[in-house]
Amino acid sequence: MQKYTPYSLLYLYTMPKGKLDIIDKVLDACYKHNPDALFVMSLMHQYEERGSLSKKQLQGLLAKASKVPDMPSNLLATLEATINRMHTREKAPATVGKPLFEKDHSLGLLMDAILAKYPQHKRVLFLMSKFNRNELLTATEKSEIEKFHKHLIQ
Image 1 (tube, helix red, strand yellow):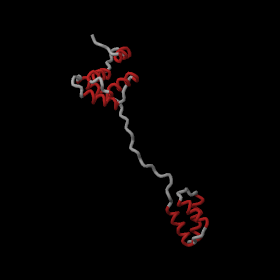
Image 2 (cartoon, rainbow, N blue to C red):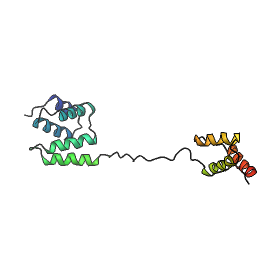
Image 3 (cartoon, rainbow, N blue to C red):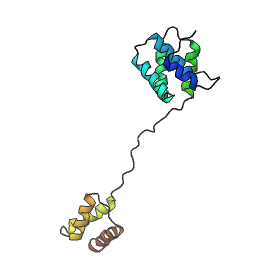
Image 4 (cartoon, helix red, strand yellow):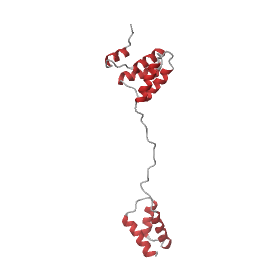
């Protein structure tokens, strides 16, 4: 007569007929081998609560179960097949995004040329300070710089 633990009785009634619960059997065998193992006990508790384990947890269980000397190889093979069937979450490597603002260096050169000839030009000084603070210049401000350059330098 097989002795049932409260843990195994719970799943005796919840498992569909004809389907073996390999994870439960592996957990029970690991628990019988070392009843003080906290990792196995925590996996048993989670399996009891949620009814499933994550892929990483199953991989840890497989590592523990492979160290049990009297563990049947068919249970280990079935557990390994169960792990291989599970989806692996792969995170994409972090990519460096394109900066939100790129300086238009040609505008900077135009403003430098204007300020070299007219260092006190207030509007160009203002636009140059915006340019140096990496603020966006509007289309009208860009056309203004080009107009100033055309009239004052060329």
